[in-house]
Amino acid sequence: MTITLLITDDHPIVRDGLRGIFTADQGFEVLGEASSGDEAVALAEKLRPDVVLMDLRMPGSGGVAAIAKLAKLRNPARILVLTTYDTDTDVVPAIEAGATGYLLKDAPREELFRAVRATARGEAVLSPAVADLILGRMRAPAPEPLSRRELEVLTLISRGSTNKEAAKLLFISEATVKTHLVHAYAKLGVKDRAAAVATAFERGLLGS
Image 1 (cartoon, helix red, strand yellow):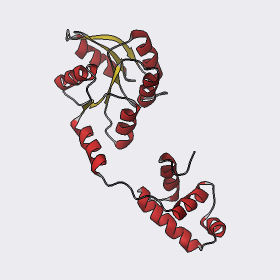
Image 2 (image 1 turned 135 degrees about the horizontal axis):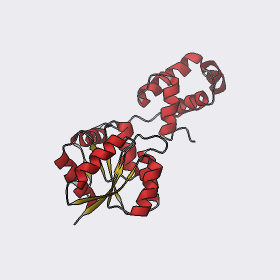
Image 3 (image 1 turned 30 degrees about the vertical axis):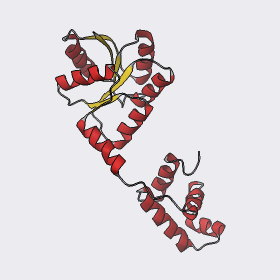
């Protein structure tokens, strides 16, 4: 059975290379190419490929947003992320958005072919580096929750209060506010107040 593909990457030379690789094999048919996430969504809806090869970082709407849109539209195409990035901030959002597989661009051609075939069957595909990353996250101990007072301090800081102002509002000393912040930094894995507030928002600790 021929597997139909949509190639999504903002670099023409990469798209040309991938098209050449797949058109040289009778088991694949490239239906189209997209240079952005929005274009990929539009073409996937029009062409209905079996598999969308999706880069992540592209101008405008990136790969993760495109994956989420296709999932929301219930597009039947399977998504295989093909990228150079293997960090937490790239891998996890892509998989959570609905990607079936995640492969790095340095994969050999036969590994790429196997990954596309497996993706077309709906099987999860992860490059070894990505699999190790996810296993490491699963094995890592759960982060220690922030205490009620630490959340109160961070909430005030997120609203623009200084340490002195937060201390006055909470009826505690400024030194105690600093102590609560230091403990919050350690639990959130950050080094300053801006990063602490941003991370707390990302984790849904401070609301929207």
